[in-house]
Length: 239
Image (cartoon, rainbow, N blue to C red; front, side):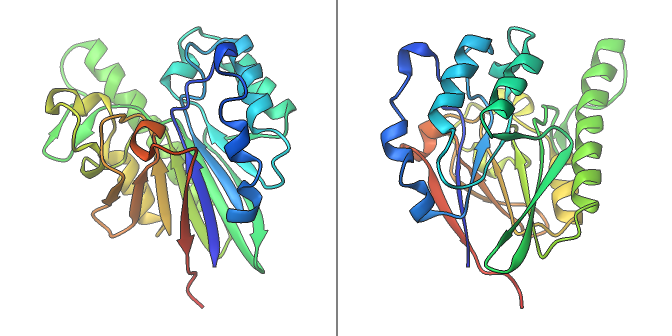
């Protein structure tokens, strides 16, 4: 059994320092690893990143993160990443991390992701340069996720994003903003890699449970959805 803890959209700043820590200190008893699905800060400043680092450092289990759109807001995402890495948090953007759990190799591939919409109701790289750039950006990110997953030589693959790969976990959000909450290109990469689980955040008013077209379990772990410090998902690897 592999126990995956996950949460996103904690939106920490110095004023919220210490609010999550009491619920996190025993996470190592509940889970084998902790995934952070982006929007860890409010405005993406180094000061806020230091709060995140202090909150999630030294928990006694591996902590793996991607950044979210809030973490990019101040154009200081490199500084935010560096501060988190200095505290022992692995931050992925088109990369992967591998750890051993219960004798099995577990691989996590992560990207922030981007918008674009979902099959049949999505944007296309046609028309104005701005529209082409929007869709080209999301497809490029999906390619990085696909490559990172494909390069993993592991027993279990996990996908970590901020934006959603499916519209199922967006239910509760206004339909008009679905194209800005995720992209089906992420789901295609996840399905091709036969992931055991995909987790994302971003959709504060969405739904926790979803599934890709290929049958991969998807979980929206935005904290406003979970209403908890984190959720734990049990994965039973195939023998």
